[in-house]
Image (cartoon, rainbow, N blue to C red):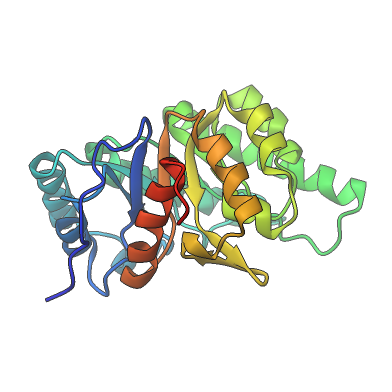
Length: 267
């Protein structure tokens, strides 16, 4: 038996509070069954695209049943082992097909959003290199959207580079933003500036602690200064906030810390 969370946080905030499907060392359905009574939404982490790493059709049906049982919604983290910007067109084409396959697999779960990595894997950041990367991404995202997906359900995650590098892609294809606050801290971007510019497109926030150049830590590792900035953003947000941690101890420490911050109490 795995330990249960001490209390429920369902309906506590103006936004949906959620966490990942990697809290317990078990499968997707087992994690949802344990977490369903305590949060509003689960981020299903489908990081790996190999067929044996993805949930089966039977497990998808179980997840749908659990969502009804616990009045729970899902968001999907799309695979990160594919590349829409690879110099090789066949690799980009395979990435489009894989992402579409995963969206089709999870479509019956009616996810609030499907989070996509548009990774920058180039060696160097010269203007010409960035431009060619952007051009490849633009073509790939266009092909992805042309498969018939609902573009608004795709949220592009803030990663290692300024999100403005893909702003024209967001605008032209009407994509949403996944604002990963931990990544913004880790890579030195101004959280408030990014939120102010992209709040109208932000459907989901990934929230986790950052300390000593490490992220995906429990929230109580945030400094007082960073906590105040985070709270200022959350007070103006109505979408989904996913506590993107990957263990029970990290989640157990994060949830009460967030509640105390929200209630203006010292954690």
